[in-house]
Amino acid sequence: MRDEKNVYLRIIFFFLLFFLIKGGNDFYGTPMKSYSYIIFLFIYLYYYLFDVLNFTDEYGRWTPWVRSSGVNIIIATILWSFSKSSLVFFKFTLLWVVTNLIRMVMVKIYRDGGTYRGIFIGKAEEYIVANKGYTERNFGNLEYISKDQVKNFAQLEDILEDKKIDIISVEEEFMKKYEKEFFKLKIKGYKVYCEWQLMQEIERKIYVKKIKVKWFLYTEGFEILNNSFQRNFKKVCDITLTIIIGIFAIPIMVITCIFIRSDGGPIFFRQKRVGLGGEEFEIIKFRSMRIDAEKDGAQWATKDDIRITKVGNFIRKTRIDELPQLWNVLKGEMSFVGPRPERKVFIEQLEKELPFYNVRHSIRPGLTGWAQVMYPYGSNVEDALHKLEYDLYYLKHQNFMFDMMIFFKTIKVVLSRKGR
Image 1: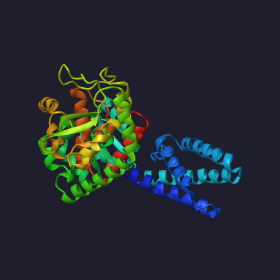
Image 2 (image 1 turned 45 degrees about the vertical axis):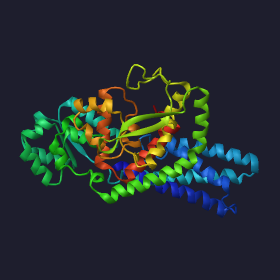
Image 3 (image 1 turned 45 degrees about the horizontal axis):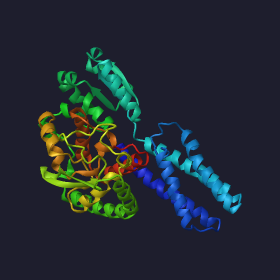
Image 4 (image 1 turned 180 degrees about the horizontal axis):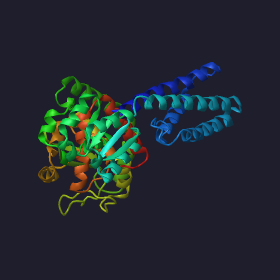
């Protein structure tokens, strides 16, 4: 996954920025003090939230320079007001220049070997959708050829060679018609995809309605289901991360309890959810809805739901309401990253309408997950389908770096209050 490359570069950038600040302080005879570490964390968080650490460079070369200059000017001004030293401005200007130069190098590293010249053979309207995703993800250039133009495969091979094409995306029906010819192209080294297979990689979800049981039998991935080391490593990471976050979250949880209590009613909300292997367990969350929220029976949560309290609206958007589920993680009922646990009454309906929905229960449900950060709102069967597509993609590609990427995205959702 190209996203994993971005995560690796962010971690490298993290340490480089740390040593830049530490080295600069040591060089100028002012070894890092406690406030220096706070400054470092603030700068890194600012860079992350404002996409300075987005090495796809989709905002252009100079936008990150402008965005990163803001935090440096603010910190330099604050520190100068205390120290009255012009050296502060010099240090932060130097830091601003060097970090952006490092970023430019990382953009080049990200792009090198990461772009592909592609060609799309099929309908024009399908090409428009594919090209939009191809461009947005910075995959490279995707050119178009009408399927009516492909009559002589020798001529097509000449086009592919002349244009130095790496990827061929073909409408599924057209590929079935010329399977042998496209097979020959594949064994010559071309990456040949059905249109929906390419979109799967671009949009990072699996098109559930396009796949059959044999797809699961023949496709690679899903190591989390049969690799005991990977499962145990994930469990260790879950417990470690839960303990660390739990310790820092104690003050937030105490304040949340006080506010919910002042609003009247119980602090916690308990409900049966379906977990690993289809087994039910009791989930615990901070109560964000009125006590009589389901007096008329089970209901999907909706956008701007009138059942949500004022305190509940805030804690849902910041995902604070999910913090008590850390206990579920420690008990082994949940993982930190995984599919969202749903209620049995909804699952019984969804399993009838959505193919492969029960595959979600092959791993523990998560406090956060790929579907939650990519498609954070769901209130009907159609939304459940989209979330299932992301969940299956996660199951297929799960690894430590993918979990880290989801963790980083969750932090951004929390701090930008885009949760639900």
